Image 1: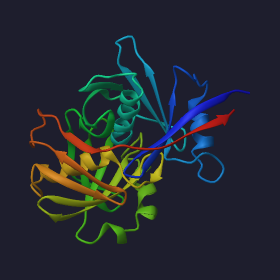
Image 2 (image 1 turned 30 degrees about the vertical axis):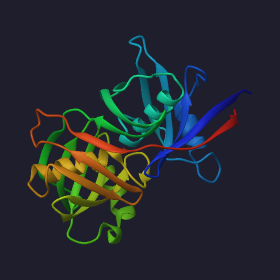
Image 3 (image 1 turned 90 degrees about the horizontal axis):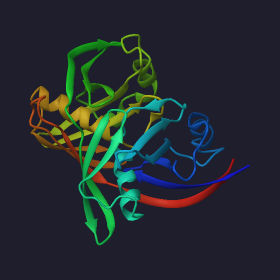
Image 4 (image 1 turned 90 degrees about the vertical axis):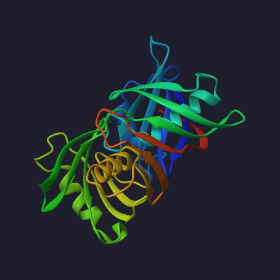
Length: 266
Protein backbone atom coordinates (compact mmCIF):
# COMPACT_ATOMS: atom_id res chain seq x y z
CA UNK A 1 0.00 0.00 0.00
CA UNK A 2 1.12 3.56 -0.65
CA UNK A 3 0.08 7.03 0.41
CA UNK A 4 -0.80 9.80 -2.01
CA UNK A 5 -1.05 13.45 -1.03
CA UNK A 6 -3.78 15.22 -2.98
CA UNK A 7 -5.26 18.72 -3.12
CA UNK A 8 -8.87 19.80 -3.49
CA UNK A 9 -9.54 22.99 -5.43
CA UNK A 10 -12.55 24.34 -7.23
CA UNK A 11 -13.41 26.82 -9.93
CA UNK A 12 -16.94 28.09 -9.23
CA UNK A 13 -17.85 24.87 -7.43
CA UNK A 14 -16.48 22.67 -10.23
CA UNK A 15 -14.30 20.68 -7.82
CA UNK A 16 -11.60 18.14 -8.56
CA UNK A 17 -8.99 16.01 -6.83
CA UNK A 18 -5.55 17.29 -7.94
CA UNK A 19 -2.50 15.02 -8.01
CA UNK A 20 1.14 15.77 -8.89
CA UNK A 21 2.10 12.76 -11.04
CA UNK A 22 5.81 13.57 -10.75
CA UNK A 23 5.53 12.79 -7.03
CA UNK A 24 2.75 10.20 -7.15
CA UNK A 25 2.78 8.25 -10.46
CA UNK A 26 -0.60 6.50 -10.37
CA UNK A 27 -0.72 3.26 -12.36
CA UNK A 28 -4.44 3.48 -13.20
CA UNK A 29 -5.73 7.04 -13.04
CA UNK A 30 -9.10 6.13 -14.56
CA UNK A 31 -9.80 3.59 -11.82
CA UNK A 32 -8.64 6.06 -9.15
CA UNK A 33 -11.06 8.65 -10.57
CA UNK A 34 -13.98 6.22 -10.56
CA UNK A 35 -13.31 5.14 -6.97
CA UNK A 36 -12.32 8.34 -5.23
CA UNK A 37 -14.53 10.89 -7.01
CA UNK A 38 -17.53 9.26 -5.30
CA UNK A 39 -18.90 11.80 -2.81
CA UNK A 40 -20.21 9.13 -0.42
CA UNK A 41 -17.58 6.41 -0.63
CA UNK A 42 -14.49 8.35 -1.68
CA UNK A 43 -12.89 11.77 -1.43
CA UNK A 44 -15.55 13.37 -3.59
CA UNK A 45 -15.30 15.59 -6.64
CA UNK A 46 -16.24 16.03 -10.28
CA UNK A 47 -13.21 13.92 -11.21
CA UNK A 48 -9.42 13.83 -10.97
CA UNK A 49 -6.91 16.29 -12.43
CA UNK A 50 -3.26 15.30 -12.80
CA UNK A 51 -0.28 17.42 -13.76
CA UNK A 52 3.31 16.55 -14.61
CA UNK A 53 6.32 18.29 -16.14
CA UNK A 54 7.01 17.87 -19.84
CA UNK A 55 10.34 17.95 -21.74
CA UNK A 56 9.29 21.41 -22.94
CA UNK A 57 9.53 22.65 -19.36
CA UNK A 58 5.79 23.30 -19.24
CA UNK A 59 3.31 21.22 -17.26
CA UNK A 60 0.76 18.89 -18.80
CA UNK A 61 -2.76 18.75 -17.35
CA UNK A 62 -4.95 15.67 -17.78
CA UNK A 63 -8.65 15.39 -16.88
CA UNK A 64 -10.40 12.23 -15.71
CA UNK A 65 -14.17 12.33 -15.29
CA UNK A 66 -16.35 10.61 -12.70
CA UNK A 67 -16.76 7.61 -14.97
CA UNK A 68 -13.02 7.32 -15.60
CA UNK A 69 -13.17 8.68 -19.14
CA UNK A 70 -10.51 11.21 -20.09
CA UNK A 71 -11.49 14.73 -21.07
CA UNK A 72 -9.66 16.94 -23.51
CA UNK A 73 -9.85 20.25 -21.68
CA UNK A 74 -11.37 21.79 -18.53
CA UNK A 75 -11.51 25.56 -18.24
CA UNK A 76 -12.15 25.61 -14.49
CA UNK A 77 -9.46 23.03 -13.72
CA UNK A 78 -6.73 24.72 -15.73
CA UNK A 79 -7.03 27.87 -13.59
CA UNK A 80 -6.65 25.72 -10.48
CA UNK A 81 -3.59 23.92 -11.90
CA UNK A 82 -2.02 27.31 -12.62
CA UNK A 83 -2.69 28.32 -9.01
CA UNK A 84 -0.97 25.18 -7.68
CA UNK A 85 2.02 25.50 -10.01
CA UNK A 86 2.60 29.18 -9.27
CA UNK A 87 2.05 29.15 -5.52
CA UNK A 88 4.26 26.06 -5.04
CA UNK A 89 7.09 27.48 -7.09
CA UNK A 90 6.83 24.83 -9.80
CA UNK A 91 6.24 27.45 -12.50
CA UNK A 92 6.75 31.13 -11.73
CA UNK A 93 5.99 32.39 -15.23
CA UNK A 94 3.18 34.85 -15.85
CA UNK A 95 1.78 34.43 -18.46
CA UNK A 96 1.97 30.68 -17.93
CA UNK A 97 1.65 27.94 -20.55
CA UNK A 98 -0.08 24.67 -19.64
CA UNK A 99 -0.28 21.77 -22.08
CA UNK A 100 -3.55 19.86 -22.57
CA UNK A 101 -4.87 17.22 -24.95
CA UNK A 102 -6.57 20.05 -26.85
CA UNK A 103 -3.35 22.04 -27.21
CA UNK A 104 -1.26 24.50 -25.23
CA UNK A 105 -3.18 27.12 -23.24
CA UNK A 106 -1.75 30.46 -22.11
CA UNK A 107 -2.96 31.95 -18.82
CA UNK A 108 -2.50 35.50 -17.54
CA UNK A 109 -2.60 35.29 -13.74
CA UNK A 110 -4.21 37.83 -11.40
CA UNK A 111 -2.10 37.99 -8.24
CA UNK A 112 -2.50 39.34 -4.72
CA UNK A 113 1.04 39.14 -3.45
CA UNK A 114 2.09 35.59 -4.28
CA UNK A 115 -1.47 34.22 -4.30
CA UNK A 116 -3.24 33.48 -7.58
CA UNK A 117 -6.78 34.83 -7.34
CA UNK A 118 -7.94 34.40 -10.94
CA UNK A 119 -6.72 33.77 -14.46
CA UNK A 120 -7.55 34.89 -17.98
CA UNK A 121 -7.20 31.88 -20.25
CA UNK A 122 -6.59 31.94 -23.99
CA UNK A 123 -8.94 29.09 -24.91
CA UNK A 124 -7.75 28.95 -28.51
CA UNK A 125 -9.78 29.20 -31.68
CA UNK A 126 -13.43 28.18 -31.34
CA UNK A 127 -15.23 26.32 -34.10
CA UNK A 128 -18.94 26.69 -34.74
CA UNK A 129 -19.63 23.30 -36.32
CA UNK A 130 -23.37 23.61 -36.90
CA UNK A 131 -26.20 26.02 -36.09
CA UNK A 132 -29.77 24.76 -35.86
CA UNK A 133 -28.76 21.17 -35.24
CA UNK A 134 -31.65 18.98 -34.01
CA UNK A 135 -30.91 16.32 -31.38
CA UNK A 136 -33.48 14.57 -29.16
CA UNK A 137 -36.15 17.08 -30.26
CA UNK A 138 -33.81 19.87 -29.11
CA UNK A 139 -32.43 22.47 -31.50
CA UNK A 140 -29.10 24.10 -30.74
CA UNK A 141 -25.60 25.07 -31.81
CA UNK A 142 -22.79 22.53 -32.02
CA UNK A 143 -19.52 24.18 -30.97
CA UNK A 144 -15.97 22.98 -30.28
CA UNK A 145 -13.63 24.80 -27.92
CA UNK A 146 -11.17 21.92 -27.69
CA UNK A 147 -14.01 19.64 -26.61
CA UNK A 148 -17.55 19.32 -28.02
CA UNK A 149 -20.60 21.22 -26.77
CA UNK A 150 -24.25 21.33 -27.81
CA UNK A 151 -25.96 24.55 -26.68
CA UNK A 152 -29.72 24.97 -26.49
CA UNK A 153 -31.05 28.50 -25.95
CA UNK A 154 -34.37 28.75 -24.13
CA UNK A 155 -36.59 31.66 -23.08
CA UNK A 156 -37.39 30.32 -19.61
CA UNK A 157 -35.17 29.99 -16.54
CA UNK A 158 -32.59 27.17 -16.98
CA UNK A 159 -33.17 26.28 -13.32
CA UNK A 160 -36.60 24.97 -14.32
CA UNK A 161 -35.32 22.90 -17.25
CA UNK A 162 -35.27 19.06 -16.75
CA UNK A 163 -31.54 18.85 -17.42
CA UNK A 164 -31.02 15.68 -15.37
CA UNK A 165 -33.53 13.95 -17.65
CA UNK A 166 -32.60 15.40 -21.03
CA UNK A 167 -28.84 15.72 -20.44
CA UNK A 168 -27.88 12.04 -20.61
CA UNK A 169 -30.03 11.53 -23.71
CA UNK A 170 -28.25 14.32 -25.56
CA UNK A 171 -24.82 13.25 -24.26
CA UNK A 172 -25.22 9.73 -25.64
CA UNK A 173 -27.19 10.52 -28.80
CA UNK A 174 -25.96 8.80 -31.96
CA UNK A 175 -25.28 12.23 -33.46
CA UNK A 176 -22.29 12.45 -31.09
CA UNK A 177 -20.32 9.16 -31.30
CA UNK A 178 -17.84 10.35 -28.65
CA UNK A 179 -20.49 12.00 -26.48
CA UNK A 180 -21.06 15.70 -25.95
CA UNK A 181 -21.41 18.32 -23.22
CA UNK A 182 -24.91 19.80 -23.13
CA UNK A 183 -25.75 23.36 -22.09
CA UNK A 184 -29.12 25.04 -21.68
CA UNK A 185 -28.94 28.82 -21.61
CA UNK A 186 -31.11 31.92 -21.40
CA UNK A 187 -30.10 35.39 -22.61
CA UNK A 188 -30.79 37.74 -19.70
CA UNK A 189 -29.54 40.86 -21.49
CA UNK A 190 -26.90 41.64 -24.16
CA UNK A 191 -24.15 41.30 -21.55
CA UNK A 192 -25.39 38.35 -19.48
CA UNK A 193 -26.19 34.68 -20.10
CA UNK A 194 -27.63 32.29 -17.52
CA UNK A 195 -26.56 28.68 -18.10
CA UNK A 196 -26.63 25.15 -16.70
CA UNK A 197 -24.56 22.24 -17.90
CA UNK A 198 -24.63 18.46 -18.21
CA UNK A 199 -20.98 17.46 -18.58
CA UNK A 200 -19.90 14.52 -20.67
CA UNK A 201 -18.72 11.79 -18.30
CA UNK A 202 -19.64 13.68 -15.12
CA UNK A 203 -23.30 14.75 -15.36
CA UNK A 204 -24.63 17.81 -13.56
CA UNK A 205 -21.91 20.15 -12.29
CA UNK A 206 -21.93 23.58 -10.67
CA UNK A 207 -20.01 25.18 -13.52
CA UNK A 208 -18.10 24.38 -16.69
CA UNK A 209 -15.44 26.67 -18.11
CA UNK A 210 -15.42 25.23 -21.61
CA UNK A 211 -19.22 25.10 -21.48
CA UNK A 212 -19.46 28.78 -20.61
CA UNK A 213 -16.98 29.54 -23.38
CA UNK A 214 -18.88 27.49 -25.97
CA UNK A 215 -22.21 29.01 -24.91
CA UNK A 216 -20.86 32.54 -25.28
CA UNK A 217 -19.38 31.67 -28.68
CA UNK A 218 -22.72 30.25 -29.83
CA UNK A 219 -24.59 33.34 -28.62
CA UNK A 220 -22.12 35.81 -30.13
CA UNK A 221 -22.13 33.88 -33.40
CA UNK A 222 -25.86 34.39 -33.90
CA UNK A 223 -25.89 37.95 -32.58
CA UNK A 224 -27.64 37.39 -29.26
CA UNK A 225 -25.05 39.09 -27.01
CA UNK A 226 -22.11 41.49 -27.00
CA UNK A 227 -18.53 40.39 -27.64
CA UNK A 228 -17.77 40.46 -23.91
CA UNK A 229 -20.35 38.64 -21.82
CA UNK A 230 -20.83 37.30 -18.30
CA UNK A 231 -21.98 33.69 -18.10
CA UNK A 232 -23.81 32.91 -14.84
CA UNK A 233 -23.90 29.31 -13.58
CA UNK A 234 -25.03 27.76 -10.29
CA UNK A 235 -21.45 27.93 -8.96
CA UNK A 236 -20.73 31.48 -10.06
CA UNK A 237 -19.83 33.57 -13.11
CA UNK A 238 -17.15 33.66 -15.81
CA UNK A 239 -16.38 36.46 -18.25
CA UNK A 240 -15.99 35.38 -21.87
CA UNK A 241 -14.55 37.58 -24.65
CA UNK A 242 -14.60 36.81 -28.38
CA UNK A 243 -14.48 38.99 -31.48
CA UNK A 244 -16.91 36.77 -33.36
CA UNK A 245 -14.24 35.72 -35.88
CA UNK A 246 -13.13 32.07 -35.90
CA UNK A 247 -9.63 33.32 -36.74
CA UNK A 248 -9.48 34.99 -33.30
CA UNK A 249 -9.10 33.21 -29.94
CA UNK A 250 -11.73 33.27 -27.23
CA UNK A 251 -10.78 34.30 -23.68
CA UNK A 252 -12.20 33.09 -20.38
CA UNK A 253 -11.63 34.85 -17.02
CA UNK A 254 -12.51 33.39 -13.63
CA UNK A 255 -11.32 32.52 -10.11
CA UNK A 256 -9.45 29.55 -8.66
CA UNK A 257 -10.04 28.51 -5.04
CA UNK A 258 -7.97 26.23 -2.82
CA UNK A 259 -9.95 24.05 -0.39
CA UNK A 260 -7.71 21.57 1.43
CA UNK A 261 -4.92 18.98 1.25
CA UNK A 262 -5.38 15.34 2.21
CA UNK A 263 -3.76 11.91 2.21
CA UNK A 264 -5.25 8.74 0.76
CA UNK A 265 -3.85 5.23 1.16
CA UNK A 266 -4.24 2.94 -1.85
